[in-house]
Length: 430
Image 1 (cartoon, helix red, strand yellow):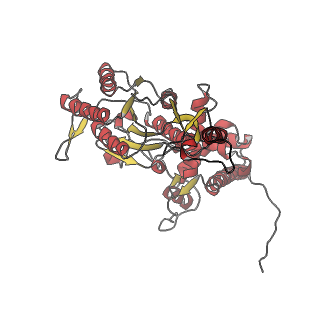
Image 2 (cartoon, rainbow, N blue to C red; image 1 turned 30 degrees about the vertical axis):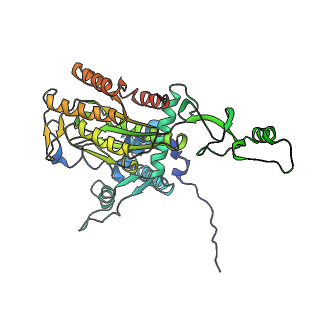
Image 3 (tube, one colour; image 1 turned 180 degrees about the horizontal axis):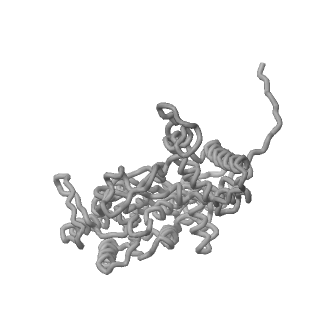
């Protein structure tokens, strides 16, 4: 026989925290971008970060800063964090312990709710050391345990980003990709038509019976034949295959501005938009740097910038191959970049680099890939995060070749431009 033991519920400090609001505040931290590889991979002009950005200790610190900014800490905790000691060692120690318990409870709730997950269990350092304190076993164990976002956490951040972006431009609802054509479907939006093979069998019963009676008269049983079938028409809704190309060369995070994290937010927002409002669409992610690679949505939060250069041609080649495998009415590439093409892959597989200006050979190879995309019916919309004259001319040339669009934007307006362009697309037939 199974037994249930009942106990009095005791409220904890972390129970009063709104996890969704907190997760929204932690969005920048959870999606923060850094250089790939260890300190040896960093260029000489950049300083690597201190500590592990994905450790539980860094997560606790980020949560503490979010709570402090939102005013959700008690006055005693705020004073303690500001270094305003009360003079009572026992009271200060009790406040420190309450802060640590609060952070642990919040981390535990985030994991229980399925928003975060840990990658490995903590390991106690060899030899004796104190449990608490800056060099204690607890701090060392927290540094060793790394966390990651779950699919639920990624989906929530995508939803919040999408809501913020659409709310800022005054859009309350989203439909599917409208076109000027008619097709057979569930929602009737025009007069019915004779049934043809391949149509959705959404019968217009009165029209079907009327045609049968007009042909053979009112008889019992009614003489119903194949040409009598009439089906409702609805607006033809097209499907689209999209590849989002993200430039992750080092310039995307240098010069005092992180441009890669906003690009990742746009990718999450597009993913949520397509999953909820455009179920017939597909979205693939391609990172291009010295080379190019496709990454799944689930790994987007941990994606970081690096290696150094910008192999735009290789990114377009991979995106074109992914799109040609999709049987959709529309195929398009959304390319987000902030720099000039500075690399290309040679026929023997080696990569040629030249960061000094616009190399004619690299440009030629890039334009060849752009032309190949146009020949395959793929539109390229480029979102440039820089305004250098040479880059502007390069982007205009890309748009001219593929008959796409060129947007010169910044990290603040990037998401709005991309989402509104995505939702305005129309399918035309010659």
